[in-house]
Structure formats: C-alpha cells, structure tokens
Image (cartoon, rainbow, N blue to C red):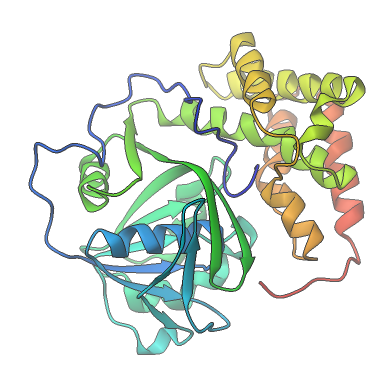
Length: 330
C-alpha cells in the first residue's frame, strides 16, 4: 500500500464499475448540518480525514492510544494546525454521528472499547482500511450501527505523531447505498471525493491489486518505489499481480489481464523516491499489515485449490522477517 492505505497518483484515476456520479464535490445539494465525527486511529489517513472533516465544519475527535499536542497537516503550499479534540479515554466518549475507523487491520480488535461508547443505532462506521473483508472484521465488535466499507486513495505520510504530509490524491470508494450518499454529503466542499461503486467487491480487489506487489517488494528490499523499475523486480511484480487476478476471479471479481497492466502503469507513474506505508512501518519498527494483503490472497487461493507460488513465497518471507523483530508503538 504505497504511502498510506493505497497506491494512487493524482494524475491517474482508478477505474470503477458503474461508479455513481454522487461525490463530495457535488454543488447542487445543501451541505448537511455539522456532524459529530470520531476518528479512531491517528496514522496518516486518520489525521488527514480528521483535517478534511474539520475544514468541512464538523465537530471532530481523534481517538488515540497515546495523545499528542496538536494535529498538523502539511501540503506543498503550507503547514496548518487543525483544531480538533484529541483523546485517549474511550470511557469518556458519547455516541456520535460518524466513526472513521482508520487503524491498521491488525489493530482492529483494539478499537472495540471506542466502538462500545461511540456507536449507537444511528451511527455509521466507515471502515477505511486495507483488504477485502472490511465488514467481517467489524461485525464481531459492533452491537448496533451501520458499517460502510471504504477504499482510500490518498497519498499521505505520518512523519511524527499528529504531523501528516499530504502528497497528492484524495478520493474514497464506497459501495453504493444510503450510507454512502450520506458520507458524500459529509465531505461535501472538501478536497476528498467520495465515489459510489455498484460492484464494490471488484473495486476492493482492484485496490488490493495495487498493494499486493508494491507493498511487500519495497518492504523486503527496504527500497522506495524506484526498485520496481529494476527488471528482475518488475518481472516479479507482474507475476504477483497475475496470481492475484487469478484468485480474484475465482472469488467472482471482474478483473483481467488489463488490470495487471493498469497497475503496472500506475506504479510507473510514481516518482522513484516515493514510498509505501508498509515500508514506512518497517522503517519505524511497527507491525506490518501483510496478512490483510498477501495473506488474504494466499488464504483464498488455498480455499480454491489454486497454486500461487510467488505470493506464497513473499508471505513466508514477510512472516519470517516480522517474527522476533523489535516493534515501536504507533
């Protein structure tokens, strides 16, 4: 997942199946009343969306394990302090209109205390995470409320607690629904475009495809995206993508060889010194999110009796590298 939660160039678009025209940039509708929003997780995506939501006029609380003093959003033009509430005490929270879950997938269970206090029958929980099992991850943790899976295409990097650099791109894909329309309204007037997709399963696999080669290859080589230009690495990337498409099609996703080529073209559009979120996590000695990416591909291949030796090898290397590695709290 290059940068954070996605691989995305601001000069390229990710195709979706029959995407709705309802986006956060629509100007024909009146903006909603200021909403209460709790953002669980203060990584790059959580901080960025907290900033976007606050600029839209909403009341935003960032929910963290370790508090920081202020939220800074840095762009090419300026660095701005965003006035949001920051808390590490779930027991003091009350029900909100919206929850944005932005933790890494392996940290999802840790959000349960927050969800217990923040979610009521009318709350929508937007799951802004990697992988293809957003809803399944949340169902055991929620007794009420609505789950809205989301695919994030934002290029951002957390460089210090509460300090995020936005490098480009800002759109989110969600399954077409009433909750999705409400989410688009919520972010109306911001830089973030919300796209509704009637074939979200395919969209989720397409997003996974963008992560499945770039993330592990930059992490294992400890190199930025320029490593994908090396002929041997480029061949390996193509093989990983082809295997993933085979698994995706077995799962019913409408992907094909053209998606492999589109993903490789996407990679080539990035500057050589761009990174991936998994690489950043390795450099910071944080746990790696490979189980929701490569691990999911390998598990589903086994279910369908498919042979995907390249992804299996990558997963073994990632697991071996992570075992016993020192970790730092996010």
